[in-house]
Length: 312
Image 1 (cartoon, rainbow, N blue to C red):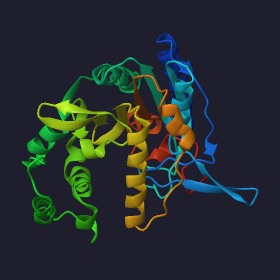
Image 2 (image 1 turned 90 degrees about the vertical axis):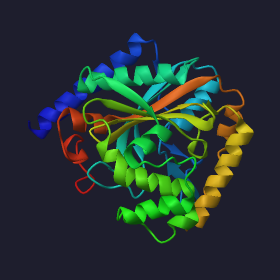
Image 3 (image 1 turned 60 degrees about the horizontal axis):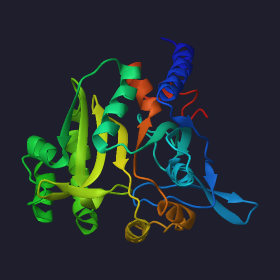
């Protein structure tokens, strides 16, 4: 299929995506891509811009903050098909600018959000079955490690024994860095080979903007990701509504950024204020371009967008 044919199909799938949300009475919104405020994540770097040669602003890495502010004002269930931007992310599956489908559902629990996200993915990939596995069970299945019991030195020994390339500061960065490296290097490529794999109930330390809860005896983040053919497609949360806890998480992320040699980012106090009024909800972000890659069995994101980074 030619690139023009793939772009025609992309237009069709944008239309079908909008029909999917309209059928569920989920309202389309359009939050700004450029903001004076920044989203804070230790491992996601923003692309800055200079306004009037005076003020630093940022291209958003997700429409999440803006959408949650609308939710807090009473918008109700909403979605956005948004171009988003991330600095330094360029590979066959990454482009510094890409499209994300993100939506929020009031009163949904995590399992309902998983089911609706699977339904959205099926628009692109057909009627695939899916299995849900917890983060803890995943590590036991693919590595034999119970991460709740393993020490950092034992995780590092696994990395060394399996000859996984690592950077010198990884032990200093701590447990989550070790787990993320093992997941990315050893496990992810095996996920979702025959059906969708829903990875749920992440360690509580990886909650980001998600609530925490008990899952058995373990405290976990109410968070899920969905994989197919080794490709991460979706990241969803039961959304945190505690502004004070979220501020502490932002401060911890900024500290981690500094420890990694990165600049800290300004806290978005408008977003934190909105969290105090945010209704109970679940949200998810799905990589639209990656769905198109899998739909067309493409090996590079440049095949399914108008132009890749080097051509733009």
